[in-house]
Image 1: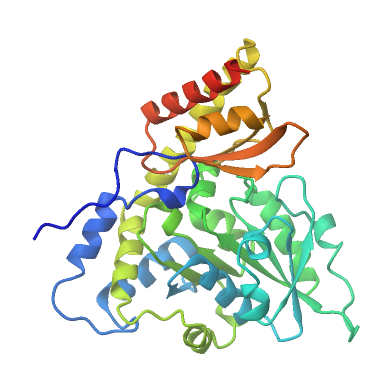
Image 2: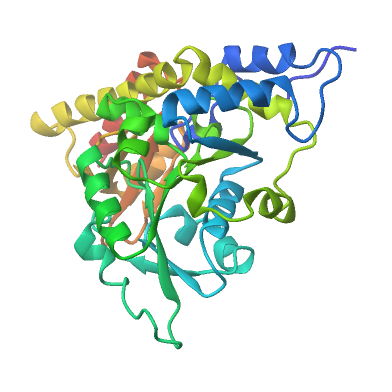
Length: 362
């Protein structure tokens, strides 16, 4: 009996890159990995190949620990570099602070020390707002700085900015974790290989994202410096992040990393966001987009804007997307428009037309 398709594949949204399907080459990699038997729990040929590729990108000391999802990657990474009394300095907008339902605290057993930032990016001065109190038994001990690349606002740290953070943190005896759910988009924006803004500038441990860049499921924790971690292989099991049939996650990561597919997919997503921003900026300039403003720089695959709530609701009748800050103003809402590896120029043009039509209606 044929398998029934339960959705309309012609429906495109600008809500999240998580909404997109799987890159065909990645889907094919799952099918190829499906033949015969392979050892479970990571003792398979695909995980072995993944380790080789991770070393190519992140250095000879790097090692990958495959996990099921992004929250699991972040919790596991942070657990492996903290003690039970540790604090993690992060941006207030960071995914670990806003969208993981307390998992770092409840599962990881650590304290988040958030800092407000205008663009999602930490600086040494901002870190120092929470990096204090060492030796004070009444305060969680700041042990880790966690940065997000690209940030929740779609902004991107330069390699020099990350180097400054790493130098600053290491001088204080702190470890640096990078949440790379959209690390591919950051690399595409910077025109750098993955190691050039991580390993080469001092990042210690990375949550390497795949789901937002065309995989079906799965991520990896990449340890750049194994000496800073403790017991990650045991913690991964305790955190319920060990897949018995791990080859099907590793095969996807191999497909992404093998010949630059990860970069091509991210470059395309970034280009589509830039195209959307360009089209709308032209309309703002010529006066045909009254009420539309941009609230963040468009550096990766996200466009942040503010527009009248009524106009946003009209656009949502055709294209789904999220309010980022619905209380942006009395009559305006701040929204996030995301593009993905499968967003087309035609999709962008149709979406831009819908936005401009909704604004024109007043």
